[in-house]
Image 1 (cartoon, rainbow, N blue to C red):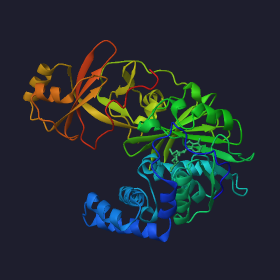
Image 2 (image 1 turned 90 degrees about the vertical axis):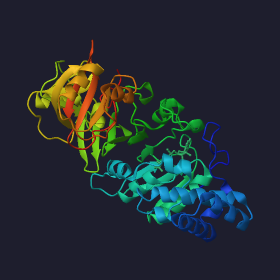
Image 3 (image 1 turned 180 degrees about the vertical axis):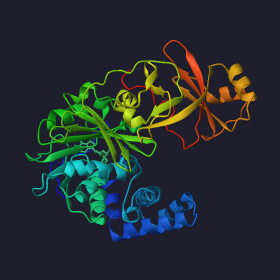
Length: 432
Ligand SMILES: C[S@@+](CC[C@H](N)C(=O)[O-])C[C@H]1O[C@@H](n2cnc3c(N)ncnc32)[C@H](O)[C@@H]1O
């Protein structure tokens, strides 16, 4: 591991340091690893965390070591479902929460490590954390330098790179100070939790996004990992960049901002669906679809495509229209072709958005379980359940979809049939 200046380290705005240097040094030694393993086994056997903590506090002279090992044990069990190597990796609670999803990291790594077939590229992961992205990029074939300014976290980072059996060097330094050689690509995943809270302001990230852009844009390739709420027109991003919105299953997880030459030619935004790797790029501003009344089907475009503002283009392909000017909720006559980019549901009824007519309509029918979904309508869905006289139910059967349109609201009864279709109000248009 390479340490430059003794001044580099977490700033005052960083989250409370969740790992002491001496504890990190001990944790990666055989004794520390054995203690974490014993704690994981005890937790697997159903032991209580308080009992484990008190046993190890008396066994280890330093209570800090016991609590660091217990945090690592709890985090390791949490990481199991997502990380193949979790059983040997070391995490802190914040470090695990901040780590990229491994499926997303390996998708992103393919573009970061791509070559024209001539040797490998060098990628500097300048905010490497506990190493999810660095591991993925090294596995994709790049030579990786992992930079982390917190020296204690860098010790766990080095351990995780070792257990993942990838070759990458670790440098303890500040992302904005470290000297990245010309020709190397840069990946930054700035911390989003100053003071323990998630932040959506790009310049409240650590390091601030506009500083990352100033330092590394217009060089050999820059990728920045951000929360999926980011708008591609955010001034912190500077000039022309591609913002890729990434969704795994029904969940919108992350965004990656790509600067030339890693940006796809002419791309303004793109959307990716994982794990199957469906990918769509938007290169221009599509004309906005006309607004019309509900047709035969309600079509809900998946959140990653809505964030990338691909919904008008998709609707145009199947002859659809919008149900409201500021809403990415579409409709069409007939049934749209099957597509991973949207879910369509037959519309069974169009009713006023009031409890009494909905209640009457349902009373006349042998209705299956009802789910209530609010699109742009504020309020408590349980109040609607109470007022239409139906118990709350999960997402099968029929849905009552309450939709705020431009000048009024409408209730559609749709046949949900299949699996849930994502987050409430995923059709809220970005940047409106
Ligand atoms: C969101 S985490 C990175 C997570 C990582 N991509 C992963 O998947 O495990 C951000 C990391 O950047 C580090 N960091 C924050 N400011 C930094 C700076 N100025 N220089 C280098 N590292 C920094 C934090 O300590 C934290 O570990």
